[in-house]
Amino acid sequence: AADWSLSCSDPTVPADGTNLVLRAATAFAAAVEARGQPVPRFAFRLEKVTPAGAGLGGGSSDAVATLRLLNAATGSPLDAAALALLAAQLGSDCPLFLHDGPVVMRGRGERIERLMAEPAARLRGQRVLVFKPGFGISTAWAYGRLAAGAPDSYLPEIGRAHV
Image (cartoon, rainbow, N blue to C red; front, side, top):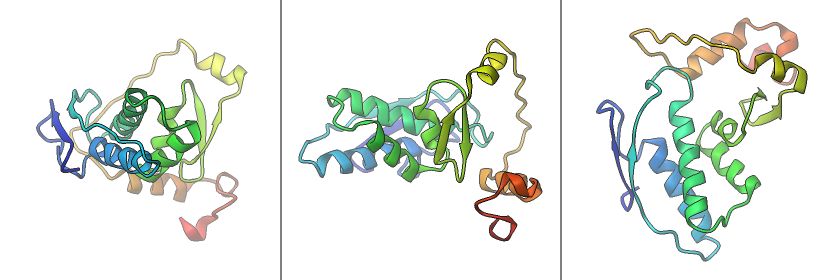
C-alpha cells in the first residue's frame, strides 16, 4: 500500500495498509497488473459516514467502492466474477456490496442471492432505525454469537460443531 495514499475525515480510522480501501487498491492492482495492464496510483480521500465498529459494513462497502472506482477508471479490465473474487478475498461481507437491491447472504457471506420479488416489495419504502451504542464489538464475534444461537435448520452446511 506504500504507492497509494489515503486520508480520512475520521481520525480514528487507520489510513495505513490495514485500511480496506488500500487493501482493495493493492489487490486490484495486483490482479490487473498480472494481466499486463498498468494501474495508476491514486490518493484516496475517505469521508466516513457509517461509524467505524458499528457492524454495518462501512469498511467493506468502502473496499468495494474502491474496486468499482479503480475498475471504471482503468477501462473495466475485470468482469463481475473477477471483482466478486477480489471482494471475497478482502472480507466475507464485501461481495454483498457488489449487488444493488436486497439480497440473502449465506455461508460466510460469499453465497448471495437476490431477494425474491414479493419480500423485496414489502421492504421497499420501509423505514429502519439503526442505533449505534458508544462502544464497538468485533463483527466476527457478533455473527458467531448469532450463528451459535440459530436453529440447526439455519446452519445445515456447517452445523453447530463448526461455529
